[in-house]
Length: 266
Ligand SMILES: C[S@@+](CC[C@H](N)C(=O)[O-])C[C@H]1O[C@@H](n2cnc3c(N)ncnc32)[C@H](O)[C@@H]1O
Image (cartoon, rainbow, N blue to C red; front, side, top):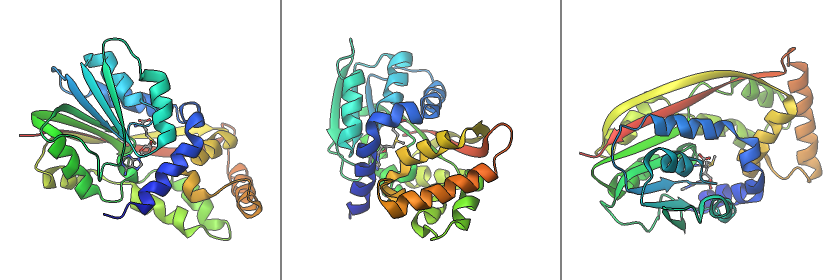
């Protein structure tokens, strides 16, 4: 399976890893809400796929006190953030593996719980990703996925469709990344899993334009480009000016949809 794009994405996350926790704090709340939705149970062996800086793992530790967590992520920089925060947490054995969901060297039928928080929308092969995660689960095990949902970020998409030169890769990424409930159900059922619950939450937020721009830099720097390059800086300045024009008294208004899924392996 080609991993070139995966490595570009992981490289982008490594570049901005030290800014991740500050810029994308809503992902922490998302991970907490995801983990709160997992059925009560004993989850000793946990796999966190696309673990990033460890927010989902932190939420799992807080709620279930597992014995062992394996975090998998292709981004070295994000794994460093994870290790600094959670590498030596008391009572939990943590193993970190630099790999993608496509080629993660983990045992089959080994995990009571697989979590995958805000990473699935970056996977290039989502059917195979669901199968790989299902393979890793023990029969009776649970998977909990949170990713970006279809329909969000429209105001920003409208801005970048208007700013020239048009960044087609960035514009198209939203269509490719944002998934809906039936698609998620398809991935899970296709992987032999039984969906327990799949739902979407829609939030409307008001933030300063700079805060939104910083969030996009941190999660999508690999697509937007290097802001120290003059042409990227010029494009970003036009985007920012257009967003300021379209902002209201409470700042830049945008909606964001989060798609949650819980499933069980029969
Ligand atoms: C937005 S971060 C989410 C991190 C963390 N799970 C959280 O909830 O904050 C997305 C993560 O997915 C990782 N990622 C990207 N492509 C991946 C792949 N193919 N397999 C596994 N992880 C991947 C990135 O390196 C990044 O750390």
